Amino acid sequence: MGATAIWLQSSGRVNLLEEISAHGVAVSGFPLFNALPLGLLLGSLFPILIITFFLTSADSSTLALGMLTTGGKESPSSLNRIIWGTLMGILASLLVVGGGIPALRSLAILSGLPFVVIAMLSIVTISVEFRKLVPIFESSTKVKRSPRSESPPRSESNEESQRKD
Image (tube, rainbow, N blue to C red):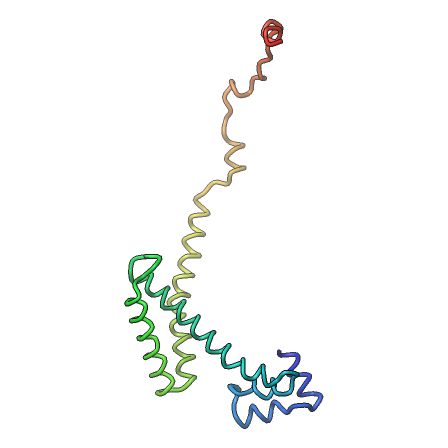
């Protein structure tokens, strides 16, 4: 939709920049959709898509948190998921009411910080493990072959081949 928005703005069909400065980025989709064919339909589907996105994200998050807190069970109990969903909803509501969207963004960035530390430790440990391994091709050239494996395969004698016929 980015190229469409630029084209609509530059052609003068819609002044998206004015709408954004007056109402904020959150409502910028509605004037864009209204300028398109079937704009009323797109404008009414837009909130449904946003709600669906939030619900599926929350469902995935509660499943992941439930699995982490139950020791890796693939299907944590419904009560466990309801508790995590409620806690996430309360936390998000407090952040939005208390500090607005910037506070929510800051929390998202801060909550990603432990993952960065874990990812960096994983990179270091896997690098150390790779240095310990001997490459397959290098080790196969250093291994001495037994004399038995170097001998040519035995051929059947004439008597054995005649018996098979």
